[in-house]
Length: 296
Image 1: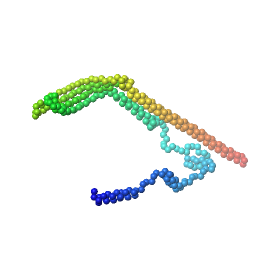
Image 2: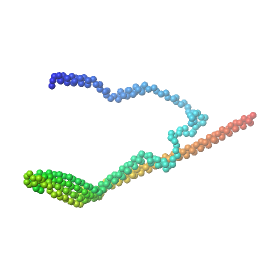
Image 3: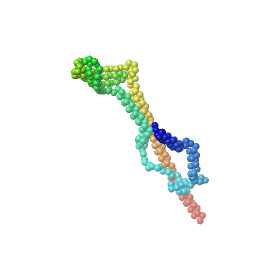
Image 4: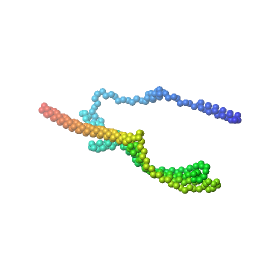
């Protein structure tokens, strides 16, 4: 390496070192400093003036917030939305449709029902078909049909397979195999000859049955039984949540109806009391006029 190149590398390293030392690291996280900043910002906010504390009974107000001589006993607040009359059947229907808890419980029951189908699909029959192509090149020394140059094999398997509840398996398979070979002649410098193609057909029926592991119907149908029991549990849970929701809706509905009837009764009593008060006021005024006439 030339000396000029060495000086350039040294200068670049010094420049990188100097520029790297100039970077400022961020300050560490200090929760006390953050709390102090929040306190200082809170001190800068202007306190709001609170209204004077009441020293006596507040005057009665009507709907327009105007003072009245008698207490105003009617409701001063109104619901935000529009009031719609609703029957008990419609309230139950809306609660069932719009309840997320009931909807989630219904999803779980549907999931467990699909798992039953998944467990039963293990015993579905299976129809299969497989094909295979194979070319081999034996390394023989002699010639003739016993020492071919290449062998080309085509195999096709098709059949039916069924899993049994006892743990066994039944399989019916049909296999066709086609074999073609190219042989070397016994004489040197002679052309290779093609041997006649031959076919081999096999029809196989097999039954496999384990004697220890996974033997018997109880061991193989256990997944289906568990899936069915989980589905029953989810269905009962869904029914319990639905009945609980309907009970709450019906209880709230009748409480609301009872409160409305009590309001009507209290309103009727208030109107009767108001009428009686007006009648008494009128009678007291009449008596005052009669007494004044008698005195004169």
